Length: 473
Image (tube, rainbow, N blue to C red; front, side):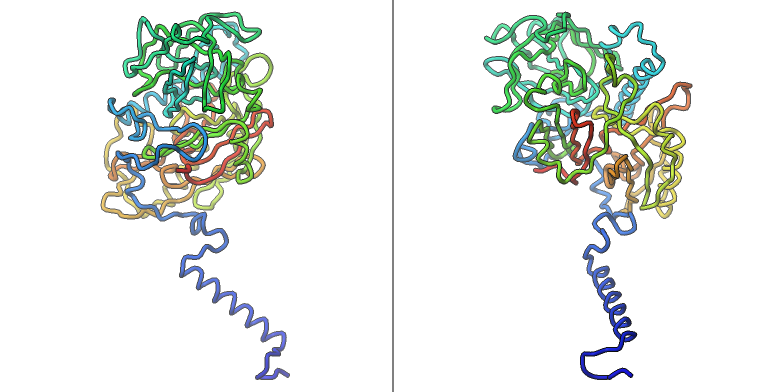
């Protein structure tokens, strides 16, 4: 028999009180917006997003540096780049260059896959289209500073030199080797004998010149003697606004990662910024200091990543994709052959047709209440799932999750999901691989999906980490 007063309740009454209290607490939290069951990841896998935040910005909102340490990163055509004298390319130009890069990456990897390496020495001088993010690096004594493209798909670092026969159109800086007291001509890395280089990129841009060795300064505390880099004397093509050369962060012998390994142990990280902010590039201990907050997945072998032949790319294991908290249940084998790479230079993530079709269908279902864009796709436009959000203040976007091996789930929302220059045409920022080729094509995780994330490369540890939500300012 239960006593109606006093603090002692019979078991059944206690259970009812407990259930009622729990439901009341849950409802209160839900109404007040307090996170429940990881609600910071979005209610039911959706995020209410201001449409204005998905559109390009024309004013730099960041401070002078992207955080308290590391090299500042800016978008090449963004308002924070400091170049200010070149019009940004149209979406069609961006997509055209992106297609050139993707086509070139696949062509190169198919050569490794097929074992067709007869012209490997020549192929090693072929690289992808240029990337979209710039860092400042100095060479020589005294220092001469340059803006270089950060590229994980290239292993050669180069800048144009004074007295170039053909000079980069949008650059007004030249390395004057005769003004540096520490410069030496030719190779200085044991085992390398070539004194000249000839870099041809996927869009037929080129840089031709000689190797030289000099002091490279990343930061005042990070100075490297006898760093081998290319001195470009014959450069042509469109590398972009204010670009002076390339910072190669691939895995090859001549890459910045390899040449600084004695101090940095082949560890670096970056946070690629939105166009109106500034990110950061960190090396060594500064990069690993972030590792406790990251989720790691293993680096795996792909075409050209083992033995003497190096493609230079970073391969990982992508297992599946979710849209709005619902797994698409794509077989992992779809992403496994020829593999998945993380690339800082490709803009739009490329997926196998089977995976992209599943992603597109799920995204369309999640966005069913919004009108499709009636604008005709322009020639070269690779995005085919677009919406007219004119007059819409906030859009409920489904979160997209990339499920990598070892439980490393990368959650994407906002501009990591949507691309567009106008509210009347905002598109899913993913594309399917080409249907017109018989060769296998890589899954490529592009920089649009990496923006505002910390991505850490631990080459000696055989892993890549992901985390964070916004570059430090």
